[in-house]
Amino acid sequence: MKPIPRPIVILIVGLSMVALLLKGFANYLEQSYSSSYTSDSIQVSKDDGKFIKQLNARPAAIQIEGKSVQFKEIWLEHRTQHVYILFLFKTVKKLGNYHLCFRLDQPIPSSYEFKGVGNEYQFAGPAPGVYWYPVEPPIAAYQIDLYKTANEMPNTKVGEVQFS
Image (cartoon, rainbow, N blue to C red):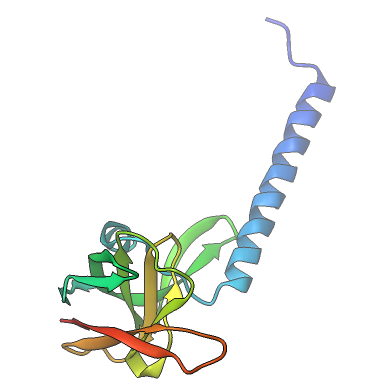
């Protein structure tokens, strides 16, 4: 069997090192620019070791523009951040407070927003229809309100949901 020519070996090693550096740089950027991240489902939260408990919604659906929007999943999880060891190996670091997360069967229109926990507005999650709030400490029940927003007039409350 013929040995691999030296220029080919150098090319393969060089390309591997460039790929490794690019991956490390991408991981560094993710860690630098993301203060925390939210799971997009209960299963992902469990897989990442941040799941605390599942909650229920009352009512289980809200009416938005004549359509019923269902709460599919509601959960409480630890607020975490991706941390990379040697910028290559990802691990999850718990940051000490919590996220109240919920998944709807469809995203809400941009003219609506939830407000509640700590009088804060919701944040869009990592997938369509997923929303979260920062909370601390975890309590037995939460209430959020749904508002229709308008540029010219005050926001109008159109519904409320209890999570417990």
